[in-house]
Length: 485
Ligand SMILES: Cc1cc2nc3c(=O)[nH]c(=O)nc-3n(C[C@H](O)[C@H](O)[C@H](O)COP(=O)(O)OP(=O)(O)OC[C@H]3O[C@@H](n4cnc5c(N)ncnc54)[C@H](O)[C@@H]3O)c2cc1C
Ligand SMILES: NC(=O)c1ccc[n+]([C@@H]2O[C@H](COP(=O)([O-])OP(=O)(O)OC[C@H]3O[C@@H](n4cnc5c(N)ncnc54)[C@H](O)[C@@H]3O)[C@@H](O)[C@H]2O)c1
Image (cartoon, rainbow, N blue to C red):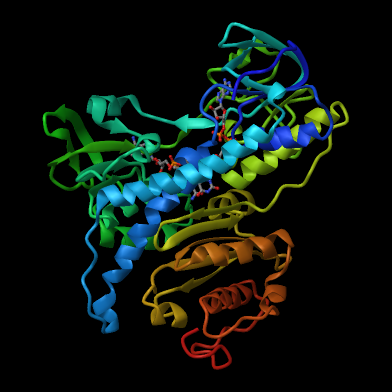
């Protein structure tokens, strides 16, 4: 794709051609033919190249192999399959390239005169400097520059063995060992997958944090589950990181009271959060008001920065850095940049996050910590453990805990945090009813089949109804629920 922009002034300039930038482009294109869609790095989006898709491609064989470890528990016989690291990575890369190919086809289908291949930064509120030496002025500008891995300087002692998710998906083979730093979403997904693919994996966290969870009971359940499976130092103390001839030597205390241990790994994978790409676009050359992170103050219902002609969408604003949110924000920014100054506000979707660990972690709507901060004691909690849950036990996936939150005044379901089997599905159902502002009683009127994992959700909702003071105590071994529900 060749840069083809001739005009130096456009109606709308979009900085970044990731998910949010492409969404913005498609929407803006409905209103104007005067657009510059600017990309400094590779086309293909973070999600398809080094994010959502390749990570799930790595998780899939890991989970399949892990399930074969349960053969004997079911009375089946068979070997746990050996891992052919080269073949695993081949498939990851082949399928990843296919997904990237679809994105590239999209970009190729755009009007080529709109595409600019360069990094852009602000000269002032209307002018952009390009890394190819040119400038573009625009009536309206959308910032959609995404994020990049955040790497604490301490990790640099790992030298050439310091890697991020960007590197993992270009491996030709699996390594023998890896130290994963950060028990957030990326660390849990990639760390567990690599462990299950036979890579010696240690996961280092901070302060017992697990993924996006804030509910102490769900965190405790998650810590137990993961620590049972692989070395997870959720509150470890790292004393030193040294690049040696053998790899990366890490000296650490697994927890503050333990003795020091020294282990050597092939790589140190930094999964310690992401940094918004706001610091490389000279945002301070604009008149926009910035927050403490240097991100322009903006309205999440319109994506407009202050009352200006500048809009911000996707990971770069750091609000909810997820794919579907980046797509929504991009579309909204594109529409509003085109409409400016007649900007529309749109209500946003219920927050929904899924971690593709096993069991899966999910968060829906209001988090436990946000409710605690906002409501004091105005909300009640209902819970269910998946350990005794019928269908989960049948399938030998009976681990985890679901906690649902409801408003004490109205009985409206507010949110949930969970770790449990196939929770991506429960989380969607919950997000839909939370968005519809349904009460707990109304949700309990909806059908629940038997025997399914959703019956566990019903148990949690009945518990919540009781704790809200709006229903009777759920029977211990509920007959109408079917055995083990
Ligand atoms: C390992 C991993 C797994 C993930 N898994 C999931 C998942 O399962 N589900 C989910 O919902 N989300 C997931 N995410 C998050 C998701 O990928 C992001 O939220 C989403 O891709 C953000 O899109 P974006 O448009 O904001 O940024 P991007 O897609 O990163 O696009 C930003 C673009 O801007 C370009 N750019 C940057 N600066 C400039 C500049 N100055 N000039 C020109 N161009 C510039 C970049 O090169 C890039 O192409 C994952 C992320 C990672 C890293
Ligand atoms: N399934 C998904 O939807 C999915 C998957 C992957 C990534 N993502 C997106 O990408 C974002 C970034 O993921 P991430 O996992 O890098 O960030 P994160 O914010 O989820 O987790 C970072 C973790 O690193 C820990 N940490 C920070 N400094 C540390 C240190 N020095 N040593 C050890 N741990 C340290 C933090 O306590 C935190 O738990 C996520 O917030 C999410 O929005 C989503």
